[in-house]
Length: 346
Image (cartoon, rainbow, N blue to C red; front, side, top):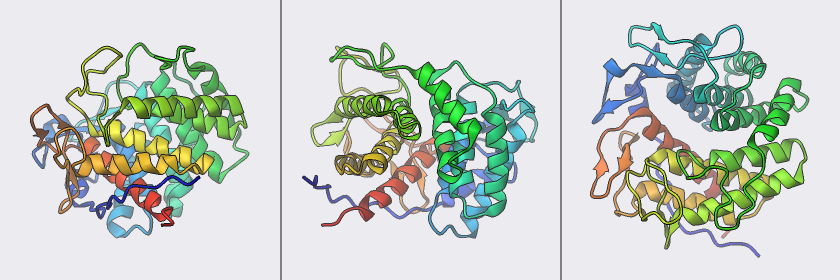
């Protein structure tokens, strides 16, 4: 039986604020209000998210294509000859720290994989494929890093189904991520929910789909269903706060962050794309609605004029700063909301 999707209007996508945070060298991580915090520099974590959003934007104009090229060049410059990545860059363009395989490595591969599959720009697609292939030669022991890398590998396989390095990464990711805990009240593979939680079940979904592993696919669907229940309160989302959550702790919790909502939207779209089950479209509609005011405070976290996204939902107010992560979380969720609306046959 088809599941009715709530009628939620997805805002238009506006990239003006993202442009204001971007220079030829990268994407500033933080903002004070709407003004870039140049002293905080650039961060690959956010640049990779920017590459995902700009590369998959339908019919992008020149503004979005230019952003995508900046984010690609930043990502390429962050990579070393072993496939690892540096995460931070100063405003003057100098890099900080050594290349490694922490979470930003996985997000970089997610961005590169998405660009290699979805970008309309041939240069971006080709360069992203080369860099992703190099990145797949190394491994991380961190679960979220590996989960994000798995998303990138899956995107590569959508364009190049026999890509050996992508298949090998997914095979190794299946071993590292394992199976959900066999406990009905707490199947989550960690002792508490933390950050961007839905990427873990989404990784199981793409692994199961690509490797034709029905058990892993079923595990991903079950874990995502459980997470969706935990992060819903009545008819709206009430997501895991920045400090995390586990059974027995008070809800709602604050500071709620947009990245948690966008991660849930990404995973639900993936579940719909793989299974065709329309129940996941309802979850995406709730994610869109969280940004526009259907949340624990009834306050909007997105400025439709500039396209800026507020950094969090506190117990009594929104965080008025509009950094890169939060802005991209809103834009990503609205992209998926538009896809979900296109599936609404009512």
